[in-house]
Every structure is written in C-alpha cells, then in structure tokens.
Image (tube, rainbow, N blue to C red; front, side, top):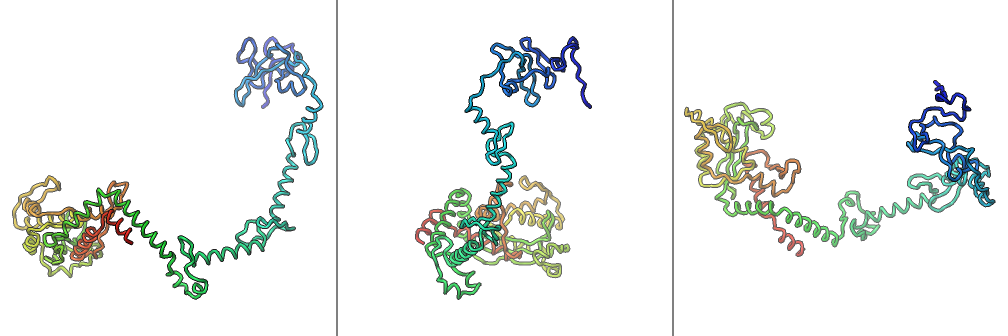
Length: 442
C-alpha cells in the first residue's frame, strides 16, 4: 500500500518539490532534521551537487539534515540555488575520469568508474583463463587443444608427465621398502629384495643396527624421565616388593574364589602359599548354597565339584595355622577380607553365640569373634593398589592409578602365584639411575 504524503500545515501553497514530506524530528541550531525520505525533494547532498559540478557557497548553511537509515548518520542537505559552480575540470582530469569509466577490453564508456574491465569482459576473461588452465599441463607447461586427460595422480597433467610421476613414485616406494625407515640407508639390494617372499619382506629388519641402538636409547631415556617424574609413587612400591621377597617364608599370599561379588557371597575355593612357593592350603569349599552360573563361568567351579568338599568351618583351624606368625599379602585385600569376615560371622552364628559389634573402619555389624580373628592377623598393604601405582596408568577422572587385572586364570592357587610374579616384577625394576647406566652400557 503506497503511503500518501501531504505537506505539513502552513505549506499547502508551496511547490510540491520544495515542500517537506514530513515533520522534523528535531532542530539543530535552527535547522530541521528529518528522517530518511521526509526532507524536501529539491535539497541535495554535497555528493549530488558535485555530480553537476556545483558546491555549497562559502558561508552557506545547510537547509536541512536527514538521518541515513542504514547507519543513523546525520547528513547535511543544501539548497542548490544558493550553491556556486565548481572550477572546470582540466583536460588531464577529464581524461582520467574517462579512463576510469572506460572498459579496457571492449572500450565501452560507463556512467560510473569500472576501474579496468567491465563485468561482462571480466567474466569472459575468467572463462578464457579457466579453459587455458584445463588445456595446459601443470608439470611441463605444454598447451593442448583439448583438456589434458589426467589419469590418477596429476592435477591437470598430461599423460607423459603422469606416467613419469608414477614411475618416480614406484621407485620411491621400492627404495623405502628396502631401506631403513629412520635414516633411509638401503638395507637390501634389489636382487635380494625381489627374491624375498611376502612373509620374508614383512619380517625384514626395517631399521639398521645403528638406528635400532638409537631407538632403544631414546626409549630407555623416555622411561627414565617418566620414572623420575613419578618416583615418589614408583619408589615405595619397588621397596615394598623387595621387602616382601627378602623374607619369602615370613610372608604368605592368600586368594579366594567366591559365588559372586556381593557382601554375602560365599567362598568356594581358598589358597595360601608362601612367597617362596610352599603351598600351605589349597582346597575347594562347600558354600552351602548353589553357585550361580555367572560365577561358574568365571572360575569354572560348579556345584558338583564342591558337593564333597569341606566347609569353611572345617578348614578354619588349618587356615589359622597357615597364617599364624606371617604377614598376609592379598590382591584386592578389601574384597577377600570382606569374604573371610562373612564366613567367620556365619561360623560363629552356627555355634549359637550372639555377640554383634560394628567395626569403626569397616562400618558393618558382624560377630565380635569374627572381628577378633580378623584383627589378630597381620595384613600387608593391598597388592593391587601397589601394582597399580607401579604400572602407572593414571586416571584423570578418578584422580588415582587404574587397577590392573591379575591374569592368574581365576583359580585361587593360580592367582596367588600370579601375585608372586607381580612382586618379582616390581622388585626387579631398576631405578632411573640404573636404567641410565644400562643404556650407556648398551
């Protein structure tokens, strides 16, 4: 819908082009200020005056202001009748203006500067350049009548250059396959390499002897720096393992297999062995309840295997004798001691005594005699936590070292022997200074 503009009151007799098309929004030094499209149509800006070679007279005041809607800037409007003529352009200025408005390709003169080629000629020149590029080999520079038929690798290359590039790549691959990956020194002559089978090539030594030694030195140096960075955690674990192995008969390793992972799971197998390897106890146990299929799938112990096995109460004297006077090492100590505590609790309940107590550290109520038996033993630090600190797999989310699997076969005696192997691995680990000496000797 077109807007009908009427002259403000008191301007009905003014010529339409000299009448304001709206009321001023404000006045600046007595000069009205209009929004865009509301000022009198006959007023001109300086740019509009310069197009007709005129300019405001010295001392001439703006007749009005207008707000430019796109950036809210106030622009002065001038009365063209009060303006004066500008000085005529020189011949040089006219020629320069003519050149700026003339297309350098087609010679057409435009009313506005084109600064070179017009849009039509520029598009035509871009198409010519693109066509020339498609017909030019980007390697040898030869120009063909038709676009270059590049096959695989080349970007706008002719067939000859494409084939030359492919030959070079085949030679480079052959040299790389027969050379040391680190220093590119050739290891195998072409005749020897051609006589090798695919399997022999895959098993070939990809590094020369000098590079192998250098790689090994770099690896040892990197491990030494990593060991030094966390020696506050690594050193105590090594010393702990060395302390245990120094007294192999004074320490025992205990492990159990259970019906599950809950607080009331029962023990189905238990083993105790000294660090020196002497087996003190290794027996299946009848838990007095069915063994879940999920537990059997882990350790392989079924109800049939334990139906004639002794109960925990029957082997308790042997277990107490095996642990007497020795320090006990357990992989995941909290779990196994929890299962022993539950078995002891049930054992004393069967005896008919009721004397419950809550341990301040464990926070659970169990039979007081069970607590007494558990506290009478000498428990060593958890081997799983010690090995996690030794392995060094830090977990940023939990802020601690990640627990590592034991890989003992999920048998009580096998897991106990696996713990001994972990202790030997930790005790034999050299210090950072020792690793540096080994690398220098190599």
